[in-house]
Amino acid sequence: MSFVLREVRHLLVDLDGVLFVGTTALPGAADFIAWLRQRGIAFRLVTNNATLTPRGYVDKLRVMGIEVEEDEVFTSALATALYLRKQRGTQSAYVIGEEGLFEALRGASVMLESEHPDWVVVGLDRKLTYDKLATGALALQRGARFLGTNPDLSLPADAGLLPGAGAIQATLTATTGIRPTVIGKPEPLMLELAMSQLGGDLSNTAMLGDRLDTDIQGAKALGIPSILVLTGVSSRRDIEQSKATPTLVVEDLAELIEVWTEDGTR
Ligand SMILES: [Mg+2]
Image (cartoon, rainbow, N blue to C red; front, side, top):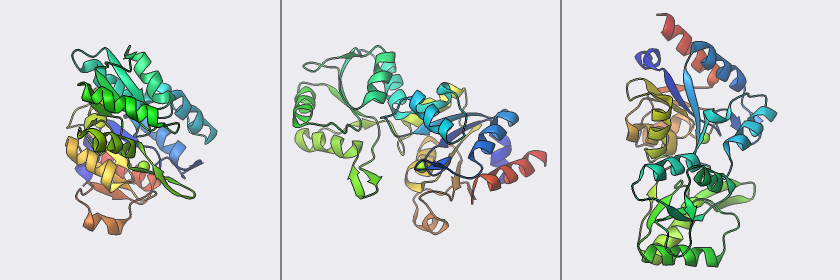
């Protein structure tokens, strides 16, 4: 297990359950970011959430005492925009989503078009209407390609589970029979784009996350080692039932620094 850490020069870091829970920083989160910088390990904070902009995350983290730069944040919205830019013949998209997604697509010069778009792009939209679903369904039937920012079927809220981006995509799939290409975890596309933005490759990049079914599964799909931190959703007991096994398991970020430091000096 220890050889992995010594080789790692680039780290993909999940946010919720790793650096914070809800609006509270996890112990050692700010220290961990400082430690990565000091150690010269480049990182991207990767999140399936396509609703916030990088600036929104920087502000959210600053309130919790964690200082990061905008370009260190990589959302599924940015990954979606980057993916579209790499596809030949992409000029326009019909978009169901929120500001984070619209801003990212503007940045990639994707034009908004509802009648004959090249793509229908679907993320979480908390102002979803029947009209938007109908427009998306019709565009898909006219031949638009279907892209989803992230596959999350639900979002946890205080009162219970709320419909997520994947549930909106599923409505369009139920209507048209067409399935989306999906960018966010556990699909490997977002992680691959973040890794290549860092200049990393499969031999020197690792994923740090709290969920076996998204972070660890996504790392496995991409082919990079993964570190499970037990401060979020998944527990040690869940590992036996999981389709993907983390390369390393740590209780918290303090233990990760400890193990990593020991490994580096060996
Ligand atoms: Mg998480």
